[in-house]
Image (cartoon, rainbow, N blue to C red):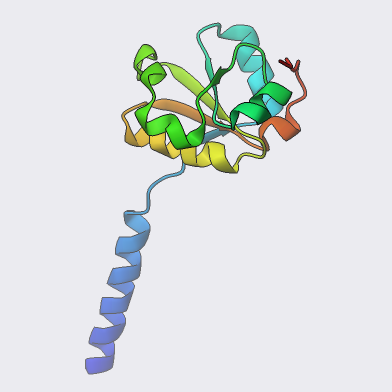
Length: 127
């Protein structure tokens, strides 16, 4: 009887953890982003890399807000929380954190560019 209770409690705990696991945000690859940009002029491209990385090459029209500044940036107030946003970094890791931060702040249509700028096949702008 005691073993059964412990087993049932363990199963309930695991089920609870799976049910309450936050769902990851949406992802978009370079090819999908190119198509998105061709059909939706309202997409906000948000680059969360550092200024020197951004200057070395970024997607034209993207906005730079380094990940460390994202939670206190005044520029975010200019973006409608329901607007489609694609978060970009070098490899897709920092942008995933940025995506989660934006969703936590109430932004609802946020994508992570998988593979980051390293996998981007479209035009690059250098400053």
